[in-house]
Image (cartoon, rainbow over all chains, first blue to last red; front, side, top):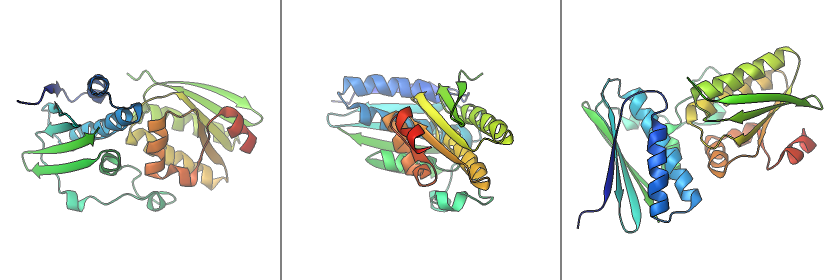
Length: 136
Length: 113
């Protein structure tokens, strides 16, 4: 049987990521996830959406699929942008950002990886899919 | 337009900024602007009461790193209290807890400030 799936299509507009977190909250309650797990999913989702909005450099929408499995939730954030090379993304360290001219931003991927149980990136020059899993 | 709001008060020379709403780039910038304004008036100790902020993003939090940097230049300090668990966790992951202070309550924050 196909897993129940919720699909969202978000326009690239300010704060649209909050629509995704509201959906995630409802699904988390349905799955009886803890508030801690729900918060972690929302935060990771915000960062994945912002990455998609900012880095896709297109006017296209961002698609989010929430796949409800028996023991986990799988979330795919899909954009149709120009893609990125994850190996070229530096791991941010606050020590390097305080007291010098280094850009203070760039924490999204680290937060996503810290908050979710599994994260995979598939990126080509026609789009990026971030697949995030939170286990029950 | 952001629905982020702030309320500023002073207790024993400590600036308290109470926030309400999503701490995104706009919210972070609002907090930054208040901090800079107060620093220009000679204030060096700033506490953020985050009880009304249940959601943040890394861009908003990154702007707080700039506030920490500015306060370091004048030997000032920044702290936070009444944080939602996920907000506290985010601050730890980003390392803000190494350069600023996290407290449970206003009372415990003021006791150390």
